[in-house]
Length: 212
Image 1 (spheres, rainbow, N blue to C red):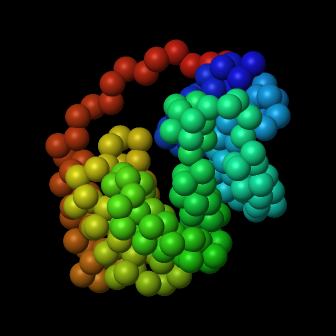
Image 2 (image 1 turned 45 degrees about the vertical axis):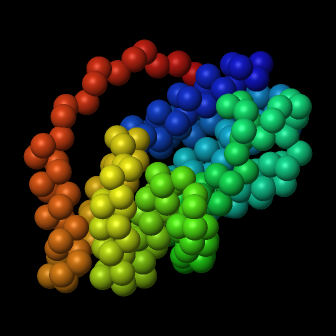
């Protein structure tokens, strides 16, 4: 059942990357029903549930899912090393929280995202740092601070760590700053994104999907 839940989690992650929020929410719920209580798969799917719910504007579900994941992350079952592939890395939870709050439009996301940025800037995974900067940029954009928001986006763009699964998040930030392209930093970010879109390769053919 846990392996089945992990398979559904991959489909959930894919739906999030595809920006198919309703499908991601359905898959996360289906995976949670499969995952044994307290298993790493259950924790991961709960965190994914928060992200999907954030895009659907379901604030109560976001907070409930994040609280559940936080209380479960240190009590995962399975007797596996912390760095095992099928363990939920507790350090990721702050990143999931920052993304969820940024998507939800919760001003509290600024504090969380800044903490994640600071933590990863001091030696964390570079790709997570870039994603955290995009999260912070989204919060700042919605707070009416377009220069700071675009600066975060430019740092992420310059990191050379973005891949298709998180590069679309930079497009999202660029779109959020569409009304501020008379400001130097948002204009520079938009020019950078426009140039990169022109040279981007077409997407690879998609694999089959899990139907739930």
